[in-house]
Amino acid sequence: ILCIRAPCLACRVCSINVYRIQLAVSLEEGAGGGGGKPQAAVASWLAGGGRGAVRGAGPAAHPGGSDRYSLKIQPVEKMHLAVVACGERLEETMTMLKSAIIFSIKPLQFHIFAEDQLHHSFKGRLDDWSFLQTFNYTLYPITFPSENAAEWKKLFKPCASQRLFLPLILKEVDSLLYVDTDILFLRPIDDIWSLLKKFNSTQIAAMAPEHEEPRIGWYNRFARHPYYGKTGVNSGVMLMNMTRMRRKYFKNDMTTVRLQWGDILMPLLKKYKLNITWGDQDLLNIMFFHNPESLFVFPCQWNYRPDHCIYGSNCQEAEEEGIFILHGNRGVYHDDKQPAFRAVYEALRNCSFEDDNIRSLLKPLELELQKTVHTYCGKIYKIFIKQLAKSVRDRYARSPKEK
Ligand SMILES: *[C@@H]1O[C@H](CO)[C@@H](O)[C@H](O)[C@H]1NC(C)=O
Ligand SMILES: *[C@@H]1O[C@H](CO)[C@@H](O)[C@H](O)[C@H]1NC(C)=O
Ligand SMILES: *[C@@H]1O[C@H](CO)[C@@H](O)[C@H](O)[C@H]1NC(C)=O
Ligand SMILES: *[C@@H]1O[C@H](CO)[C@@H](O)[C@H](O)[C@H]1NC(C)=O
Ligand SMILES: *[C@@H]1O[C@H](CO)[C@@H](O)[C@H](O)[C@H]1NC(C)=O
Image (cartoon, rainbow, N blue to C red; front, top):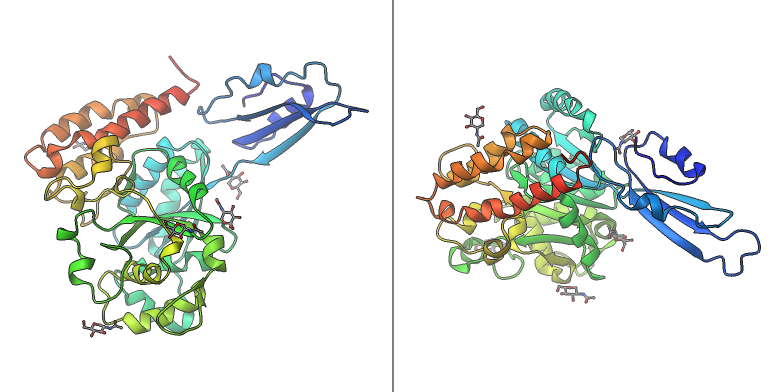
């Protein structure tokens, strides 16, 4: 347990067995103090599990002559991450969760929706990581509104439409990052989470475009339903302010009345059932076509897919800053079609949580990537490790166990 050098009052707080709390220590002047303005305010991260630092907290927390202190403890805002795992997705999902844990700074709350037969394995694997104390998880069964359960289950891939119901199931959760199982975080979740604060007053969710290059775009060439923007949006990485999603009344092309999230899904499915190809992602595209002011569009390096490089590079932001979130859709982590994607997946899958192990993942990965330069994605392999290398450096710099 780390403890700031501060009055005893604070020390007592440190002993509370909470893994990571944000201490907002405001030192106020005591009796008779006119304005009662805080003399100093210290906010610092306390971290267990060998991570995080309390740099600078010690000296600043000294009272400097005040005779009374008030101490406010606010629990750190947790970042909520949801995933839906069905079929043979255990290993892939665990690798995604591992990448989230390795680089993220604030504590994580995982919401894992999985078929019943996977629960036991998830529990076993996640409990093996509980020594980290940087995350918590809840496992949920796949559930649908009962009257239409069968219809929802067969839409798109089994279970994929579960995600549409998250705002209704996780009623107590304000905001959530939903990701597909084939996502890898190459930088802290904190960074995408911070985009929530950039939403303007009408935005409720954030996604990346489905394509950068309309000539190879799917929606603009083939869709038989409305879709958002020029090329549609991809729902594999979806950041949501669910408080706003639950409150909003959505414009739609079914009635002149605006409908809430819970009331719009089934009529939408009924209307477009025969015309949709990509299931729930198509429904989201239809929704945001009618309510474009509600969507925050983030750039392609937050949801980087084979489409961004298989016919030549078309995600300019990733070329400049590197890939932030890798999305190996089309099964590319598990076959030989896009070896650059597979190399990153295997490097993270092989990695453990020890600092040295994480640092030493880069060199062999780079060697693997150099073997992929015969592919279009491999030609620009540097963008696969640019941000990753920085995240590894930053993580090491945060670690108090510097050598
Ligand atoms: C995880 O959840 C348990 C109980 O649900 C709670 O006591 C604990 O503080 C939580 N840990 C973190 C890191 O949030
Ligand atoms: C479905 O597609 C057909 C053929 O393109 C089109 O005529 C029809 O209007 C579409 N249905 C809806 C609900 O958009
Ligand atoms: C989500 O929106 C609600 C309502 O506008 C707001 O109170 C809340 O702070 C937002 N959450 C985040 C994480 O920005
Ligand atoms: C919020 O941003 C979206 C997308 O740029 C825009 O369509 C919408 O009008 C903005 N809302 C407000 C209130 O400015
Ligand atoms: C990951 O481990 C497997 C088997 O343990 C090994 O064959 C492979 O080369 C490793 N890959 C990387 C990128 O470290």
